[in-house]
Image (cartoon, rainbow over all chains, first blue to last red; front, side, top):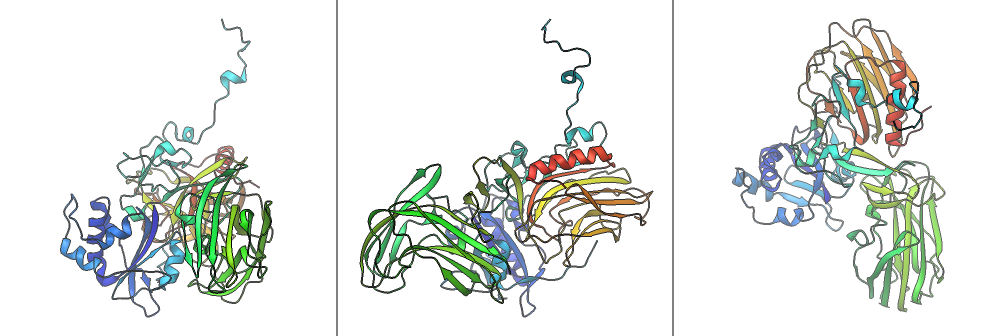
Length: 126
Length: 448
Protein backbone atom coordinates (compact mmCIF):
# COMPACT_ATOMS: atom_id res chain seq x y z
CA UNK A 1 0.00 0.00 0.00
CA UNK A 2 1.00 3.61 -0.48
CA UNK A 3 -0.08 6.66 1.45
CA UNK A 4 -1.69 9.63 -0.25
CA UNK A 5 -2.53 13.03 1.18
CA UNK A 6 -5.02 15.26 -0.58
CA UNK A 7 -5.99 18.91 -0.24
CA UNK A 8 -9.41 19.53 -1.73
CA UNK A 9 -10.67 23.11 -2.18
CA UNK A 10 -13.85 23.84 -0.26
CA UNK A 11 -15.84 24.40 -3.44
CA UNK A 12 -14.96 20.95 -4.74
CA UNK A 13 -15.70 18.87 -1.65
CA UNK A 14 -19.00 17.48 -2.92
CA UNK A 15 -17.52 16.45 -6.27
CA UNK A 16 -14.39 15.05 -4.65
CA UNK A 17 -16.47 12.94 -2.30
CA UNK A 18 -18.24 11.46 -5.30
CA UNK A 19 -14.86 10.64 -6.82
CA UNK A 20 -13.85 8.98 -3.56
CA UNK A 21 -17.10 7.02 -3.67
CA UNK A 22 -16.23 5.81 -7.17
CA UNK A 23 -12.58 4.97 -6.48
CA UNK A 24 -13.05 3.83 -2.91
CA UNK A 25 -13.92 0.59 -1.23
CA UNK A 26 -17.53 1.36 -0.33
CA UNK A 27 -20.24 4.00 -0.28
CA UNK A 28 -18.91 5.27 3.05
CA UNK A 29 -15.96 6.72 1.18
CA UNK A 30 -18.14 9.67 0.17
CA UNK A 31 -17.32 10.92 3.66
CA UNK A 32 -13.63 11.22 2.79
CA UNK A 33 -13.61 15.01 2.74
CA UNK A 34 -15.17 16.61 5.77
CA UNK A 35 -15.09 20.19 6.92
CA UNK A 36 -12.84 22.65 5.09
CA UNK A 37 -10.73 23.24 8.16
CA UNK A 38 -7.36 23.83 6.51
CA UNK A 39 -6.19 26.98 4.77
CA UNK A 40 -3.42 28.17 2.51
CA UNK A 41 -1.43 31.35 2.94
CA UNK A 42 -4.12 33.26 1.07
CA UNK A 43 -6.86 32.10 3.40
CA UNK A 44 -8.43 29.73 0.88
CA UNK A 45 -10.09 26.80 2.62
CA UNK A 46 -9.56 23.10 2.01
CA UNK A 47 -10.69 19.74 3.28
CA UNK A 48 -7.83 17.31 3.65
CA UNK A 49 -7.64 13.57 3.72
CA UNK A 50 -4.80 11.14 4.10
CA UNK A 51 -4.47 7.40 4.23
CA UNK A 52 -3.46 4.14 2.62
CA UNK A 53 -4.53 3.15 -0.85
CA UNK A 54 -3.52 0.32 -3.15
CA UNK A 55 -0.41 0.63 -5.30
CA UNK A 56 -2.70 0.81 -8.31
CA UNK A 57 -4.49 3.89 -7.05
CA UNK A 58 -2.54 6.57 -8.99
CA UNK A 59 -3.18 4.77 -12.28
CA UNK A 60 -6.80 4.09 -11.40
CA UNK A 61 -7.37 7.70 -10.46
CA UNK A 62 -6.16 8.80 -13.88
CA UNK A 63 -8.09 6.18 -15.84
CA UNK A 64 -11.65 6.38 -17.17
CA UNK A 65 -14.01 6.05 -14.25
CA UNK A 66 -16.10 2.92 -13.84
CA UNK A 67 -19.39 2.99 -11.94
CA UNK A 68 -19.04 1.23 -8.61
CA UNK A 69 -21.52 -1.45 -7.46
CA UNK A 70 -23.13 1.23 -5.31
CA UNK A 71 -24.59 4.32 -6.95
CA UNK A 72 -22.52 7.46 -7.46
CA UNK A 73 -22.75 10.77 -9.27
CA UNK A 74 -20.39 9.95 -12.12
CA UNK A 75 -20.55 13.45 -13.60
CA UNK A 76 -19.46 14.98 -10.32
CA UNK A 77 -16.72 12.38 -9.95
CA UNK A 78 -15.45 13.16 -13.44
CA UNK A 79 -15.37 16.88 -12.66
CA UNK A 80 -13.23 16.18 -9.61
CA UNK A 81 -10.97 13.76 -11.47
CA UNK A 82 -10.20 16.40 -14.07
CA UNK A 83 -8.86 18.69 -11.37
CA UNK A 84 -6.41 16.26 -9.74
CA UNK A 85 -2.76 17.29 -9.73
CA UNK A 86 -0.06 15.05 -8.24
CA UNK A 87 3.03 16.50 -6.56
CA UNK A 88 6.35 15.29 -7.91
CA UNK A 89 9.89 16.46 -7.32
CA UNK A 90 10.03 17.57 -10.94
CA UNK A 91 6.66 19.31 -10.83
CA UNK A 92 5.97 20.39 -7.26
CA UNK A 93 2.58 21.89 -6.61
CA UNK A 94 0.89 23.57 -3.69
CA UNK A 95 -2.75 23.57 -2.70
CA UNK A 96 -4.80 25.88 -4.87
CA UNK A 97 -8.51 26.68 -5.25
CA UNK A 98 -8.39 25.49 -8.84
CA UNK A 99 -7.12 21.94 -8.34
CA UNK A 100 -7.19 18.96 -6.02
CA UNK A 101 -3.60 18.48 -4.89
CA UNK A 102 -2.26 15.01 -4.13
CA UNK A 103 1.04 14.03 -2.49
CA UNK A 104 2.21 10.43 -2.37
CA UNK A 105 4.33 9.75 0.70
CA UNK A 106 4.20 8.24 4.14
CA UNK A 107 4.28 11.39 6.25
CA UNK A 108 0.88 13.01 5.99
CA UNK A 109 1.66 16.11 7.98
CA UNK A 110 4.83 16.67 6.00
CA UNK A 111 2.77 16.33 2.84
CA UNK A 112 0.42 19.02 4.03
CA UNK A 113 3.37 21.26 4.78
CA UNK A 114 4.59 20.76 1.23
CA UNK A 115 1.15 21.68 -0.06
CA UNK A 116 1.28 24.83 2.04
CA UNK A 117 -1.84 24.32 4.13
CA UNK A 118 -2.25 24.70 7.85
CA UNK A 119 -5.09 23.92 10.17
CA UNK A 120 -7.58 26.70 10.82
CA UNK A 121 -7.42 27.21 14.59
CA UNK A 122 -10.27 25.29 16.15
CA UNK A 123 -12.52 26.50 18.91
CA UNK A 124 -11.30 24.99 22.15
CA UNK A 125 -14.05 22.71 23.40
CA UNK A 126 -12.09 21.56 26.40
CA UNK B 1 -5.67 -37.88 42.62
CA UNK B 2 -2.94 -36.08 40.72
CA UNK B 3 -0.52 -36.05 43.56
CA UNK B 4 0.87 -32.62 42.71
CA UNK B 5 0.71 -31.46 46.28
CA UNK B 6 -1.58 -28.48 45.66
CA UNK B 7 -2.94 -27.80 49.12
CA UNK B 8 -5.88 -25.59 49.90
CA UNK B 9 -3.64 -22.56 50.29
CA UNK B 10 -1.80 -23.10 47.05
CA UNK B 11 -1.39 -19.86 45.13
CA UNK B 12 -1.65 -21.87 41.93
CA UNK B 13 -5.31 -22.48 42.70
CA UNK B 14 -6.51 -19.31 44.36
CA UNK B 15 -4.46 -16.51 42.84
CA UNK B 16 -6.70 -14.78 40.32
CA UNK B 17 -5.14 -13.46 37.14
CA UNK B 18 -5.40 -9.70 36.73
CA UNK B 19 -6.46 -8.59 33.30
CA UNK B 20 -7.76 -5.24 32.12
CA UNK B 21 -10.90 -6.98 30.87
CA UNK B 22 -11.62 -8.36 34.33
CA UNK B 23 -11.99 -4.80 35.63
CA UNK B 24 -15.22 -4.50 33.69
CA UNK B 25 -16.75 -7.49 35.42
CA UNK B 26 -19.60 -7.64 36.34
CA UNK B 27 -21.14 -4.25 35.52
CA UNK B 28 -18.45 -1.95 34.20
CA UNK B 29 -19.08 0.00 31.03
CA UNK B 30 -16.52 1.55 28.76
CA UNK B 31 -13.98 0.57 26.17
CA UNK B 32 -10.91 -1.63 26.03
CA UNK B 33 -8.77 -1.61 22.88
CA UNK B 34 -5.55 -3.57 22.72
CA UNK B 35 -3.82 -3.43 19.32
CA UNK B 36 -1.47 -6.25 20.30
CA UNK B 37 -4.54 -8.48 20.26
CA UNK B 38 -4.56 -8.42 16.48
CA UNK B 39 -7.33 -10.97 16.25
CA UNK B 40 -9.61 -8.16 17.44
CA UNK B 41 -8.68 -5.83 14.56
CA UNK B 42 -10.26 -5.72 11.12
CA UNK B 43 -9.64 -3.72 7.98
CA UNK B 44 -13.31 -3.07 7.36
CA UNK B 45 -15.85 -1.60 9.73
CA UNK B 46 -18.04 -4.67 9.33
CA UNK B 47 -15.31 -6.87 10.78
CA UNK B 48 -14.89 -9.34 7.93
CA UNK B 49 -11.29 -8.73 6.80
CA UNK B 50 -8.64 -9.24 9.50
CA UNK B 51 -6.04 -6.55 10.06
CA UNK B 52 -3.01 -8.61 11.00
CA UNK B 53 -0.03 -7.17 9.16
CA UNK B 54 1.91 -3.97 9.73
CA UNK B 55 0.46 -1.24 7.55
CA UNK B 56 -3.01 -2.72 7.35
CA UNK B 57 -5.81 -0.16 7.71
CA UNK B 58 -7.93 -0.70 10.80
CA UNK B 59 -11.64 -0.12 10.30
CA UNK B 60 -12.77 -1.97 13.40
CA UNK B 61 -11.16 -2.47 16.80
CA UNK B 62 -13.26 -4.79 18.86
CA UNK B 63 -14.00 -3.75 22.41
CA UNK B 64 -12.47 -6.28 24.79
CA UNK B 65 -14.43 -4.98 27.77
CA UNK B 66 -17.30 -7.27 26.87
CA UNK B 67 -19.67 -4.38 26.36
CA UNK B 68 -19.66 -4.46 22.58
CA UNK B 69 -18.57 -0.84 22.26
CA UNK B 70 -16.38 -1.53 19.26
CA UNK B 71 -14.52 1.40 17.74
CA UNK B 72 -14.93 1.69 14.01
CA UNK B 73 -14.22 3.85 10.98
CA UNK B 74 -15.88 3.14 7.64
CA UNK B 75 -14.19 5.79 5.49
CA UNK B 76 -11.05 4.32 3.93
CA UNK B 77 -8.69 7.26 4.26
CA UNK B 78 -9.78 7.96 7.85
CA UNK B 79 -8.78 4.56 9.17
CA UNK B 80 -5.73 4.30 11.40
CA UNK B 81 -3.07 1.80 10.39
CA UNK B 82 -1.66 -1.11 12.31
CA UNK B 83 2.02 -0.84 13.16
CA UNK B 84 4.74 -2.44 15.23
CA UNK B 85 8.12 -1.48 16.59
CA UNK B 86 10.50 -3.02 19.11
CA UNK B 87 9.84 -2.67 22.81
CA UNK B 88 13.19 -0.87 22.91
CA UNK B 89 11.59 2.05 21.09
CA UNK B 90 11.43 3.36 17.56
CA UNK B 91 14.82 4.59 16.40
CA UNK B 92 15.54 3.64 12.79
CA UNK B 93 13.76 6.22 10.65
CA UNK B 94 15.21 4.97 7.36
CA UNK B 95 11.89 3.70 6.12
CA UNK B 96 12.23 0.61 3.99
CA UNK B 97 16.00 0.38 4.51
CA UNK B 98 15.79 -3.37 5.19
CA UNK B 99 13.03 -3.99 2.63
CA UNK B 100 15.66 -4.87 0.05
CA UNK B 101 13.25 -6.61 -2.30
CA UNK B 102 10.88 -3.69 -2.59
CA UNK B 103 10.73 -0.43 -4.46
CA UNK B 104 12.37 1.25 -1.47
CA UNK B 105 15.64 0.24 -3.09
CA UNK B 106 14.44 0.60 -6.64
CA UNK B 107 15.60 -1.67 -9.41
CA UNK B 108 18.36 0.51 -10.79
CA UNK B 109 18.55 3.12 -13.48
CA UNK B 110 20.83 5.19 -15.65
CA UNK B 111 22.31 8.51 -14.60
CA UNK B 112 24.90 10.54 -16.52
CA UNK B 113 26.51 7.58 -18.21
CA UNK B 114 26.41 5.19 -15.28
CA UNK B 115 24.06 2.25 -15.04
CA UNK B 116 22.91 1.07 -11.62
CA UNK B 117 21.47 -2.40 -11.27
CA UNK B 118 20.19 -4.25 -8.25
CA UNK B 119 21.85 -7.60 -8.89
CA UNK B 120 21.10 -9.46 -5.70
CA UNK B 121 19.40 -9.49 -2.34
CA UNK B 122 19.49 -11.79 0.64
CA UNK B 123 20.32 -12.02 4.30
CA UNK B 124 23.77 -12.11 5.83
CA UNK B 125 24.22 -12.59 9.56
CA UNK B 126 20.53 -11.98 10.00
CA UNK B 127 20.70 -8.64 8.23
CA UNK B 128 19.09 -8.09 4.81
CA UNK B 129 21.49 -6.92 2.13
CA UNK B 130 21.25 -5.60 -1.39
CA UNK B 131 23.93 -5.90 -4.07
CA UNK B 132 24.14 -2.96 -6.45
CA UNK B 133 26.36 -2.86 -9.50
CA UNK B 134 27.49 0.43 -10.98
CA UNK B 135 28.91 0.32 -14.51
CA UNK B 136 29.74 2.69 -17.34
CA UNK B 137 31.64 5.88 -17.94
CA UNK B 138 30.44 8.91 -16.09
CA UNK B 139 29.67 11.94 -18.17
CA UNK B 140 29.35 14.39 -15.30
CA UNK B 141 30.66 14.82 -11.82
CA UNK B 142 27.28 14.36 -10.13
CA UNK B 143 25.42 11.18 -10.87
CA UNK B 144 23.95 9.64 -7.83
CA UNK B 145 21.35 7.01 -7.22
CA UNK B 146 20.67 4.83 -4.26
CA UNK B 147 18.30 4.55 -1.39
CA UNK B 148 16.06 7.62 -1.35
CA UNK B 149 16.23 10.43 1.15
CA UNK B 150 12.47 10.85 0.80
CA UNK B 151 12.13 7.71 2.91
CA UNK B 152 13.93 9.08 5.92
CA UNK B 153 12.68 12.53 6.82
CA UNK B 154 12.82 13.12 10.56
CA UNK B 155 10.98 16.21 11.80
CA UNK B 156 13.43 18.10 13.99
CA UNK B 157 14.61 21.63 14.53
CA UNK B 158 17.64 21.02 16.72
CA UNK B 159 19.91 18.32 18.03
CA UNK B 160 21.74 15.62 16.14
CA UNK B 161 20.80 13.02 13.55
CA UNK B 162 23.10 10.24 12.47
CA UNK B 163 23.14 7.85 9.54
CA UNK B 164 25.09 4.61 9.37
CA UNK B 165 25.53 1.82 6.86
CA UNK B 166 27.77 -1.18 6.31
CA UNK B 167 29.07 -2.08 2.86
CA UNK B 168 31.91 -3.75 1.01
CA UNK B 169 33.09 -4.21 -2.54
CA UNK B 170 32.17 -7.70 -3.74
CA UNK B 171 33.18 -7.39 -7.40
CA UNK B 172 35.12 -5.01 -9.59
CA UNK B 173 36.99 -1.98 -8.38
CA UNK B 174 35.64 1.15 -6.74
CA UNK B 175 36.12 4.56 -8.35
CA UNK B 176 39.59 5.96 -7.80
CA UNK B 177 38.83 9.66 -8.00
CA UNK B 178 37.71 11.88 -5.17
CA UNK B 179 37.35 10.30 -1.74
CA UNK B 180 33.63 10.74 -1.91
CA UNK B 181 33.26 8.82 -5.16
CA UNK B 182 31.92 5.34 -4.73
CA UNK B 183 29.38 4.55 -2.03
CA UNK B 184 28.79 7.06 0.73
CA UNK B 185 26.22 8.63 2.98
CA UNK B 186 24.75 12.07 2.78
CA UNK B 187 22.66 13.81 5.43
CA UNK B 188 20.49 16.81 4.62
CA UNK B 189 18.86 19.55 6.59
CA UNK B 190 15.57 20.48 4.93
CA UNK B 191 13.05 23.26 5.36
CA UNK B 192 9.32 22.69 5.74
CA UNK B 193 8.92 22.34 1.99
CA UNK B 194 11.77 19.78 1.82
CA UNK B 195 14.16 22.24 0.17
CA UNK B 196 17.78 21.48 1.05
CA UNK B 197 19.29 24.03 3.42
CA UNK B 198 22.63 22.36 3.92
CA UNK B 199 24.18 18.94 3.66
CA UNK B 200 27.20 16.87 4.50
CA UNK B 201 28.73 13.71 3.08
CA UNK B 202 30.81 10.86 4.40
CA UNK B 203 33.89 9.37 2.79
CA UNK B 204 33.28 6.35 0.61
CA UNK B 205 33.90 2.67 1.18
CA UNK B 206 36.62 1.01 -0.90
CA UNK B 207 37.32 -2.14 1.11
CA UNK B 208 36.32 -5.68 0.24
CA UNK B 209 35.73 -6.25 3.95
CA UNK B 210 32.57 -5.07 5.65
CA UNK B 211 33.09 -1.44 6.60
CA UNK B 212 30.68 0.72 8.54
CA UNK B 213 30.50 4.43 7.89
CA UNK B 214 28.56 6.94 9.93
CA UNK B 215 27.64 10.54 9.36
CA UNK B 216 26.02 12.87 11.86
CA UNK B 217 24.75 16.41 11.66
CA UNK B 218 24.01 18.80 14.48
CA UNK B 219 23.66 22.48 15.20
CA UNK B 220 20.82 22.67 12.76
CA UNK B 221 20.49 25.53 10.29
CA UNK B 222 17.97 28.32 10.74
CA UNK B 223 14.63 27.25 9.32
CA UNK B 224 15.34 23.54 9.44
CA UNK B 225 12.23 21.40 9.75
CA UNK B 226 13.53 17.96 8.78
CA UNK B 227 16.68 15.98 8.39
CA UNK B 228 17.01 13.16 5.92
CA UNK B 229 19.66 10.68 4.84
CA UNK B 230 20.65 9.52 1.39
CA UNK B 231 22.82 6.60 0.29
CA UNK B 232 24.73 7.57 -2.82
CA UNK B 233 26.64 5.62 -5.44
CA UNK B 234 28.77 7.96 -7.46
CA UNK B 235 31.62 7.86 -9.94
CA UNK B 236 34.05 10.50 -11.05
CA UNK B 237 33.62 12.15 -14.45
CA UNK B 238 35.13 10.25 -17.43
CA UNK B 239 36.19 7.33 -15.25
CA UNK B 240 35.33 3.85 -16.51
CA UNK B 241 33.62 2.09 -13.65
CA UNK B 242 32.45 -1.43 -12.92
CA UNK B 243 31.92 -2.15 -9.26
CA UNK B 244 29.41 -4.06 -7.18
CA UNK B 245 28.74 -3.25 -3.54
CA UNK B 246 27.00 -5.30 -0.90
CA UNK B 247 25.02 -2.89 1.28
CA UNK B 248 23.29 -3.61 4.59
CA UNK B 249 22.38 -2.20 7.97
CA UNK B 250 21.29 1.24 6.84
CA UNK B 251 19.96 3.21 9.79
CA UNK B 252 19.06 6.85 10.31
CA UNK B 253 18.19 8.07 13.78
CA UNK B 254 18.17 10.92 16.23
CA UNK B 255 21.39 11.31 18.18
CA UNK B 256 25.05 11.70 17.41
CA UNK B 257 26.04 8.03 17.69
CA UNK B 258 24.52 5.03 15.93
CA UNK B 259 22.69 2.50 18.08
CA UNK B 260 21.95 -1.17 17.56
CA UNK B 261 20.38 -1.86 14.18
CA UNK B 262 16.62 -1.95 13.91
CA UNK B 263 15.13 -3.53 10.81
CA UNK B 264 12.89 -0.97 9.15
CA UNK B 265 10.73 -2.62 6.53
CA UNK B 266 8.28 0.30 6.40
CA UNK B 267 7.21 3.13 8.70
CA UNK B 268 4.77 0.65 10.23
CA UNK B 269 7.07 -2.35 10.46
CA UNK B 270 10.22 -2.00 12.53
CA UNK B 271 11.80 -4.82 14.50
CA UNK B 272 14.96 -5.43 16.49
CA UNK B 273 16.74 -8.60 17.51
CA UNK B 274 16.10 -9.68 21.09
CA UNK B 275 13.29 -7.20 21.70
CA UNK B 276 9.62 -8.11 21.53
CA UNK B 277 7.33 -6.28 19.16
CA UNK B 278 4.84 -3.75 20.45
CA UNK B 279 1.76 -3.11 18.32
CA UNK B 280 -0.12 0.11 17.88
CA UNK B 281 -2.71 2.05 15.92
CA UNK B 282 -1.06 4.79 13.90
CA UNK B 283 -3.08 8.00 13.71
CA UNK B 284 -2.06 10.42 10.96
CA UNK B 285 -3.30 13.65 12.55
CA UNK B 286 -5.17 14.54 9.38
CA UNK B 287 -8.36 12.54 9.37
CA UNK B 288 -7.76 9.26 11.22
CA UNK B 289 -10.13 8.57 14.09
CA UNK B 290 -12.59 5.96 15.31
CA UNK B 291 -15.87 6.07 17.16
CA UNK B 292 -18.03 3.71 19.16
CA UNK B 293 -21.74 3.43 19.30
CA UNK B 294 -23.52 5.70 21.78
CA UNK B 295 -22.76 4.44 25.24
CA UNK B 296 -24.83 4.74 28.41
CA UNK B 297 -22.12 5.74 30.88
CA UNK B 298 -24.48 5.72 33.85
CA UNK B 299 -22.17 7.02 36.58
CA UNK B 300 -20.35 10.16 37.67
CA UNK B 301 -16.99 8.38 37.69
CA UNK B 302 -14.40 7.58 35.08
CA UNK B 303 -10.97 6.07 34.77
CA UNK B 304 -9.07 6.30 31.49
CA UNK B 305 -5.66 4.76 30.95
CA UNK B 306 -3.83 5.05 27.66
CA UNK B 307 -0.46 4.05 26.32
CA UNK B 308 0.34 6.38 23.48
CA UNK B 309 3.05 8.30 21.67
CA UNK B 310 1.78 11.65 20.45
CA UNK B 311 3.83 13.00 17.58
CA UNK B 312 2.47 16.53 17.53
CA UNK B 313 4.38 19.37 19.01
CA UNK B 314 2.35 22.41 18.10
CA UNK B 315 -1.27 21.52 17.51
CA UNK B 316 -4.05 20.68 19.91
CA UNK B 317 -5.28 17.12 19.79
CA UNK B 318 -7.41 14.67 21.72
CA UNK B 319 -6.35 11.03 21.98
CA UNK B 320 -9.63 9.95 23.62
CA UNK B 321 -12.91 11.50 24.54
CA UNK B 322 -16.18 10.25 25.99
CA UNK B 323 -19.52 11.91 26.74
CA UNK B 324 -20.80 14.64 24.39
CA UNK B 325 -20.26 18.35 24.45
CA UNK B 326 -22.77 20.19 26.60
CA UNK B 327 -22.45 17.80 29.47
CA UNK B 328 -19.27 16.78 31.19
CA UNK B 329 -17.10 15.58 28.36
CA UNK B 330 -13.75 14.12 29.10
CA UNK B 331 -10.59 13.33 27.31
CA UNK B 332 -6.93 13.91 27.12
CA UNK B 333 -6.17 17.17 25.42
CA UNK B 334 -2.84 18.65 24.64
CA UNK B 335 -2.90 22.31 23.83
CA UNK B 336 -0.64 24.11 21.43
CA UNK B 337 1.26 25.46 24.40
CA UNK B 338 2.35 22.01 25.44
CA UNK B 339 -0.14 21.18 28.14
CA UNK B 340 -1.51 17.70 28.66
CA UNK B 341 -4.80 18.03 30.44
CA UNK B 342 -7.53 15.80 31.69
CA UNK B 343 -10.73 17.72 31.32
CA UNK B 344 -14.23 17.42 32.68
CA UNK B 345 -16.94 19.89 31.85
CA UNK B 346 -16.25 23.18 30.18
CA UNK B 347 -13.05 24.02 31.95
CA UNK B 348 -9.68 22.42 32.21
CA UNK B 349 -9.81 20.92 35.65
CA UNK B 350 -6.35 19.48 35.76
CA UNK B 351 -3.31 19.94 33.68
CA UNK B 352 0.37 19.26 33.63
CA UNK B 353 3.17 20.36 31.41
CA UNK B 354 3.91 17.56 29.05
CA UNK B 355 7.11 16.82 27.19
CA UNK B 356 6.97 17.35 23.47
CA UNK B 357 9.03 14.51 22.06
CA UNK B 358 10.06 15.05 18.48
CA UNK B 359 9.30 11.56 17.37
CA UNK B 360 6.58 10.58 19.75
CA UNK B 361 8.01 8.90 22.81
CA UNK B 362 5.63 6.34 24.26
CA UNK B 363 4.01 7.29 27.55
CA UNK B 364 1.26 5.99 29.80
CA UNK B 365 -1.34 8.53 30.85
CA UNK B 366 -4.14 7.90 33.29
CA UNK B 367 -6.88 10.01 34.69
CA UNK B 368 -9.64 9.42 37.15
CA UNK B 369 -12.55 11.73 37.74
CA UNK B 370 -15.59 11.95 39.95
CA UNK B 371 -18.18 14.64 39.40
CA UNK B 372 -20.29 14.72 42.53
CA UNK B 373 -17.42 14.89 44.99
CA UNK B 374 -15.07 16.60 42.61
CA UNK B 375 -11.72 14.94 42.22
CA UNK B 376 -9.64 14.73 39.09
CA UNK B 377 -6.23 13.13 38.93
CA UNK B 378 -3.81 12.99 36.02
CA UNK B 379 -0.95 10.53 36.06
CA UNK B 380 1.94 10.16 33.67
CA UNK B 381 4.13 7.06 33.51
CA UNK B 382 2.90 5.90 36.89
CA UNK B 383 3.32 9.16 38.79
CA UNK B 384 0.62 11.61 39.85
CA UNK B 385 1.33 14.85 37.98
CA UNK B 386 -1.81 16.91 38.59
CA UNK B 387 -4.86 16.97 40.82
CA UNK B 388 -7.88 19.23 40.93
CA UNK B 389 -10.83 19.42 43.28
CA UNK B 390 -12.59 22.10 41.24
CA UNK B 391 -16.23 21.64 40.36
CA UNK B 392 -16.83 19.37 37.41
CA UNK B 393 -20.50 20.23 37.09
CA UNK B 394 -23.33 18.08 38.35
CA UNK B 395 -25.05 14.78 37.72
CA UNK B 396 -23.57 11.90 35.85
CA UNK B 397 -21.81 11.62 32.54
CA UNK B 398 -24.11 11.95 29.56
CA UNK B 399 -24.65 9.15 27.10
CA UNK B 400 -22.79 9.43 23.82
CA UNK B 401 -20.19 8.02 21.50
CA UNK B 402 -16.59 7.56 22.52
CA UNK B 403 -13.95 8.93 20.15
CA UNK B 404 -10.48 7.52 19.68
CA UNK B 405 -7.95 9.91 18.17
CA UNK B 406 -10.16 12.99 18.11
CA UNK B 407 -12.55 15.15 20.07
CA UNK B 408 -15.52 13.66 18.25
CA UNK B 409 -14.14 14.87 14.92
CA UNK B 410 -11.79 17.82 15.43
CA UNK B 411 -8.52 17.88 17.39
CA UNK B 412 -7.15 14.91 15.48
CA UNK B 413 -4.23 13.07 16.97
CA UNK B 414 -0.99 12.29 15.20
CA UNK B 415 0.91 9.46 16.82
CA UNK B 416 0.59 5.94 18.09
CA UNK B 417 -1.96 4.32 20.42
CA UNK B 418 -0.76 1.10 22.07
CA UNK B 419 -3.69 0.53 24.38
CA UNK B 420 -6.79 2.23 25.73
CA UNK B 421 -8.93 1.41 28.72
CA UNK B 422 -11.88 3.55 29.75
CA UNK B 423 -14.31 2.49 32.45
CA UNK B 424 -17.23 4.11 34.25
CA UNK B 425 -15.84 3.77 37.74
CA UNK B 426 -12.82 4.92 39.68
CA UNK B 427 -10.33 2.11 39.78
CA UNK B 428 -8.68 1.60 43.12
CA UNK B 429 -5.08 2.77 43.47
CA UNK B 430 -3.89 -0.81 43.21
CA UNK B 431 -6.00 -1.42 40.12
CA UNK B 432 -4.68 1.74 38.50
CA UNK B 433 -1.10 0.71 39.10
CA UNK B 434 -1.76 -2.71 37.60
CA UNK B 435 -3.48 -1.16 34.61
CA UNK B 436 -0.60 1.25 34.11
CA UNK B 437 1.88 -1.60 34.33
CA UNK B 438 -0.13 -3.53 31.78
CA UNK B 439 -0.27 -0.57 29.39
CA UNK B 440 3.41 0.16 29.94
CA UNK B 441 4.31 -3.33 28.76
CA UNK B 442 2.18 -2.84 25.67
CA UNK B 443 4.19 0.24 24.73
CA UNK B 444 7.65 -0.60 26.03
CA UNK B 445 7.42 2.15 28.63
CA UNK B 446 9.30 2.13 31.92
CA UNK B 447 7.15 3.56 34.69
CA UNK B 448 8.60 5.93 37.23
